[in-house]
Amino acid sequence: MKILTVVGARPQFIKAAPVSRALRQAGHTEFLVHTGQHYDYGMSQVFFDEMGIPAPDANLGIGSGSHGAQTGQMLAALEGVMLEQQPERVLVYGDTNSTLAGALAAVKLHIPVAHVEAGLRSFNRQMPEEHNRVLTDHCADLLFCPTQTAVDNLAAEGITAGVHRVGDTMYDAVLQFSAVARQKSSILQDLGLEPGGYLLATVHRPYNTDVPENLAAILSAFEEIGEPVVFPAHPRTRKMLEKFNLNSDIENLKLIEPVGYLDMLMLEQHARLLLTDSGGMQKEAYFFGVPCVTLRPETEWVETVEAGWNVLVGANRAQIVAAAQNFVRPPAHPSLYGDGHSAGVIVGWLGNTFDSTNKI
Ligand code: UD1
Ligand code: UDP
Image (cartoon, rainbow, N blue to C red; front, side):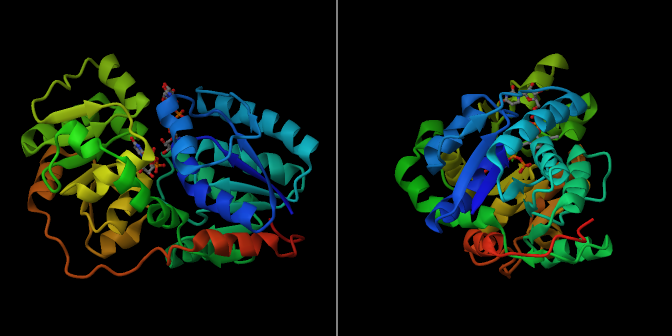
């Protein structure tokens, strides 16, 4: 079967890597399209290099822009590629503008859409990701949900056909690449870090980066925590630090460029605690049994909070400090995101025939 995959942003390369491998092993033909949403080496190519993802068959080179312009340019370009390639399925991941553009282009051409990470909801319509998720799910014929919560969210919106709970391909990726990371990454030595002797932080949500008071509160919380905080800054965050003239020259803060996946796996598993507004990193913290303090008022990954391994604090300085300093590790660590074989299950469903006549 010919499957056209759309990726474009950092987390999508990671989610797609195990599926791309399984697709090819199963004998399917994958036509991989990179929208170009992320384009710096450290935001894009490093993941292809480290995770053995085949070079994209097409790179649309769309780059950065306002939501409408970026999504619209992707939509037009993807339509052209889909018309030319005539795939039997279009596969999209997660909740970025690349996801929505891929789903919209396909549904309008009557090509079945498969969505990996379907059914996630923050119930916060201020987030661009929330529009992207809802709209993509309502275009999709095959909805691959990581959790029962995601299945239930879809049912609440009337979507039950084509819904499959498959676990999380990010867990597949962690299992596939952790040993490689241990062999190849020297990031702990390079940064002079002791296992358990530092916190790891990432921040990139507009709610945190584009609101100067919130970004300032987060930085001041990191300073007050006092322990070493390693902070690989997303380019958006770097830009906003400069724009708002915020002082990141803080003694216990190691502000570094974004790191590759292998370095990130090492940094995550050896951190005492993660401070993040990333979706993927809340899960990765959980996979490694590392506590997470989430710099958002809500999360799509509610199971991690219910299990006691994740605390939601938003951009509130005092709450960030208290959560980081007083975190109590829960005794239990249930399996929440599948068995590490999600990619194979997804590929199995993708190859099946299904009725798409009443999908919307
Ligand atoms: C996007 C996704 C977000 C996801 C994140 C993962 C949307 C709406 N947002 O957010 O869901 O969590 O990716 O990282 O799709 N930039 C660079 N170099 C790059 C990429 C971006 O400098 O390679 C800078 C540009 O100034 C750009 C800004 O980062 O304007 C934001 O990039 P964009 O892709 O629009 O959104 P993200 O914040 O990365
Ligand atoms: N990641 C990485 N290097 C970094 C920051 C993140 O490899 O410097 C990885 C991280 O391990 C996770 C994914 O990128 O697998 C998460 O992406 P991001 O936080 O950009 O987006 P989100 O998950 O919030 O959509």
